[in-house]
Image 1 (cartoon, rainbow, N blue to C red):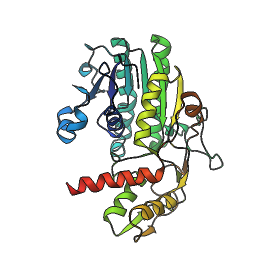
Image 2 (cartoon, helix red, strand yellow):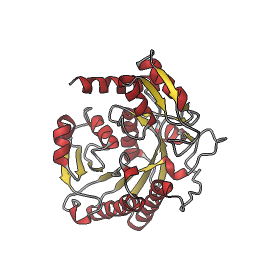
Image 3 (cartoon, rainbow, N blue to C red):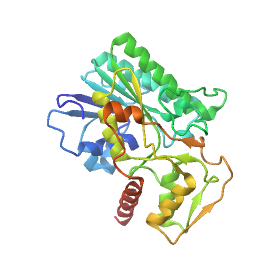
Image 4 (cartoon, rainbow, N blue to C red):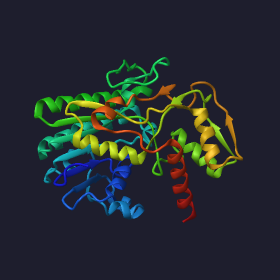
Length: 324
């Protein structure tokens, strides 16, 4: 956690990443730590999540509208995570690019104007491009070429462009900059009805007749629990090396088919797993597993919650929501 006299602004505080960070704040951190969340619709979030909303101050604003940003405040740290990752696929490529790149530029301008000394940008493992099948884990220096003619690469290309803006502002204005390249996650705040395979499998195991695998099941992923995610991000904000990017995720790979079977075994052993898709259906990358040795060795971060425990925790949380 950042120093207790820190004044932290978080963009994207109402999504999966933001809720993970807010839940981390429920732990004792000291009275002098000030957290402000930027949101387009804070009242809506307060109604849905009153307990989480009470953990921070709120300001209304949109990263695409510079005039709405809180330039009258003073922040020592900024975590910029605002991006519609869940509904992003419903956005036009031009809208997605604009949101990520122009939004990041506007928040960087805010950081400069309010005198923030440290900035953590929530990027994506997608910036690496297609992970070679013979490369078990991808390291931070492994950024490859992304084909700009393919609009399915828009999100990843925009994240790379936003990273470049971060480095430019670091050089121009002396803002300490850390980039978190995030992979795949699991936790109660992950949607069950979006494009996240693990969420879909848990939904199926809880409430459907069978667990459905959209592709052929051979693609490989790894999953970090959102409680570990929050701890990692706050640690990177506080002690991440200025000018460095870090992978954020689990380095324990599992095939999508084995993941479906694991979810079934843990939640609903009597159900079947059905593979109904062809190779490459449903997922953009066949392998998506980070090397986390840099975060492990430099920041003493690690995977502390097993995938099994994370799946059970997520399933229990959704059972409780369904029973209310």
